[in-house]
Length: 99
View 1: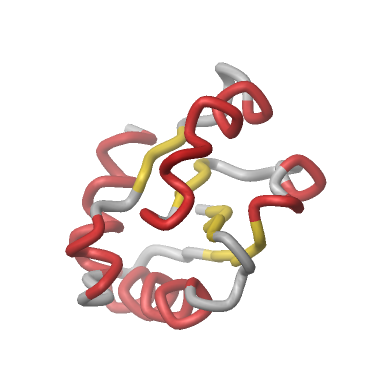
View 2: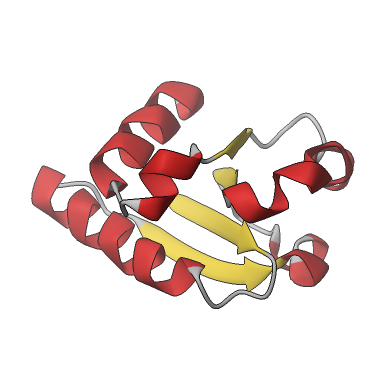
């Protein structure tokens, strides 16, 4: 599963990206997460299974959905899951989203 994790500057998501990959490994799921700033969203969509927006960029959800289109699922990470680095909750939600 390839995920694109988007935040304002691409820095605060790097810890969550690593935790998502670790959580996937613990579940026996290959999870690859790339953390990028919002300005690089469109340039990094190739091969992505889902786009995750950090809560700090939830204001840009409409623009992100327009950039991503209908073929790639997109979700905003809950502030409490992001703040507590709850990779287990986020991965559960992504798995449900993707199907």
